[in-house]
Image (cartoon, rainbow, N blue to C red; front, side):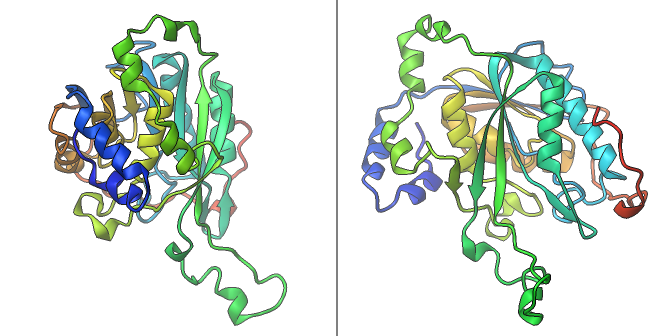
Length: 326
């Protein structure tokens, strides 16, 4: 197993560092395969039904200035996109397996949009079970006094309070129920390679519904510049907790390739969809940093060479309330 410098930084100063390095040295080199398809993930016809064992992804933030600004003409269009992706996820996900969304509500034009609630509703209407929700909490220093929270400082009276958000939701959905008897049928090598490190789980409190993890700052890494990437630590934990070595993990909103890199480090295969062809070099650079990873890229007609934002159709306040999410 290749040394993961980010993991070493996380474990520095703990007794787990020695155990991690010991594991790296003793682990077999497993060749993994990673397919990157540049195209719209509302159509994933390249993937057969029940061929994906786990999905780990962060859907785009609705019209955020740092993540495809103006991509959707209104919030209903954004929800329709999520609904189409949910349909495809249900088709390609193996029975009993997991889909994880890293997502949160957005403040747009002064209105807080209930993206978490709407995403849960869409996935449940599609047929998934809502299994769990983990709160990813970013460092307090990440958000200093902003224009939003600073209002109450300028006007120290009731009704001027607007908090800064330092959390996101990790939503966990399941397609039916998992047949645990299948684990007894797996070969010992696969089970051993998939074993979760209980010492790390307990020391870093994976067992809790709150995960304090430092967020990715785009200015720190050229591979993340201009991308709303989520931390590799989140992808790594979810891949270890919900997939077995050699299985296939999907990220339909691949971005810079964080999920695929985590899969390569952990002996899983991956498939990723990304709309923007301009991210090709970043994705391949990130995955290929894991020496045993084999990458194949494909380009569809519905991918885009360069993203150009569009203007929203109407201000949120003037839109007609939707009757249904589907």
